[in-house]
Length: 584
Image 1 (cartoon, one colour):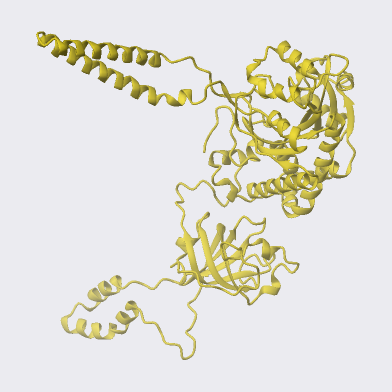
Image 2 (cartoon, one colour):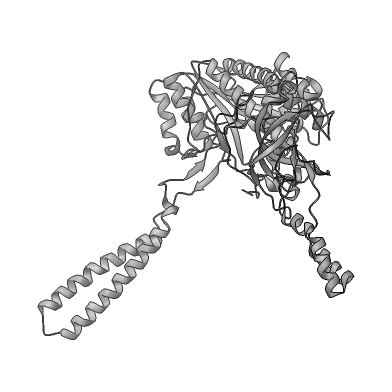
């Protein structure tokens, strides 16, 4: 039975808000925890696997009071029952009946549990006697258990795998599992099968490692920008601006004309006024009482109709929540630029949305992005910032998540660490878009590559993995391929934009220098047919104190693929959202 938790003096630091020892504080010790043997501890987690061993009941300690069960009391009275049986006859038949109703005492057993609490790759072996908790209550995979006990040397199982175990002497909590409905098992399941159970899959060792690496990448990204003088700015998710001008944003609500119900309600209200005036006239003329009664009845019906239309209009209020067409933001860089024009260096980290129906393994409808804008900077400055950022993040994750990376190298992709070191320590190749097209024309692809066409994933992989075998920066793209606000180059055909392409996942960063010239920006918007009213606030930045700005968008989720060796972004994102798929 679970009991209330009592304070325990622990040789290890307790988790500040749960008063237990996390497994990473045990496994990270140089001695693997051997120095903790004999110490008391409170640990908790979820059962990953278990086994039961039958054991003989231990003899009572000398001088200890003996607990006597009802079964034992009945067994001591058997000689008395037998004497009665002999008197009344039928000794054997009655003896069989008596012995059949006497329950046999359960054979003592020991449950060996391997538990994990999500703090590290390692699990911990916990030994629980059946007298403390019935095996059927604690052995099912997924069971949550919190125990108090003593560290000891491994007694029965996994002596080579585990250097210590916990011998439980108090059960503080048991969270049982419905085994018929619980989707996880002792056997390793393919990641594809776990996508429909996104709420349970972090309990698997692989997904837990991915999430810890993802956390490490997040911390590294924030640390880089904080150490380099950037201010974190929260940009809106809902916006009235199609941020890239390419029409790929998810629409929240269309701009709507005044609804038919609103027009109908105005007509009814006008009718109510006219009918009220008519009733007033009839009241002054007391001779026509029948006409007055009919008018009152008509007014009542009209008032009821008005109430019905008003109720319907209130129900449809959400359709007109915003006065204009609204989107889920595909990029926060336009909004960031307004703050860079006042604060200097700014960054943001949050979800961005793309209305793509493709089933890409690299892209989702909801993607997390790191975005920056730097005032008084040009294209070369942002390119250098992107290189420094990637190198910093890779170095930091190699230091902070060594255990998880080692596990991913063993379980998923043996080249994980080598790829991170390729960015952390190696050079980047820089080529123009025009040079990239010349190189690609020498390769063999399904379709021909011509100047002005976007680089496909196949083209990106060819450049980074086969030609240069390192990260590649492609700059000066055709202006038609990039957002409307990318600064036009002097050739009139290309713009100041760049992509950072890495092996395995392709483009990770897309950046540009913004067009600070009012006339050039206005002409570009007119050329693309963009609605002037929608971007008026952005154009205002050019009218009043314009400054050169550049920045980039870093696609966080594909970088998690790069850092973990996974092949599908659905497995690297906690709750993936993509076209036609939404489970939680």
